Image (cartoon, rainbow, N blue to C red; front, side, top):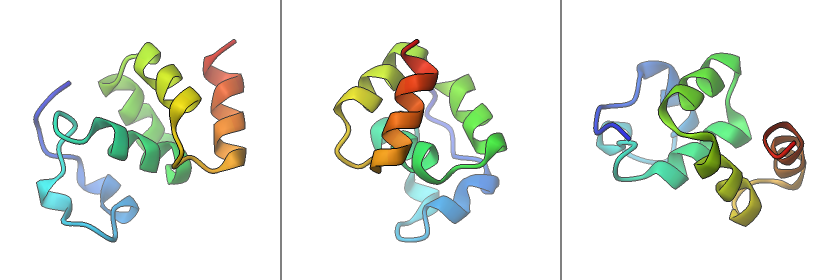
Length: 80
């Protein structure tokens, strides 16, 4: 995972924290959960280029922060 800043298009998903301090290296779970829960097609594509599929499968299976519908959707999409 890279230690670069997140692209500006993701700012709207992190309304409650200091966006400039977020990096994938430091907060991969938090960032991934937010994007999986609230992201649009462009943000999901960006996430999939930064995180490997096995990490996302593990996240979907173990996260307490994904809402029920999101968890079900990503379980179907990733775990098939």
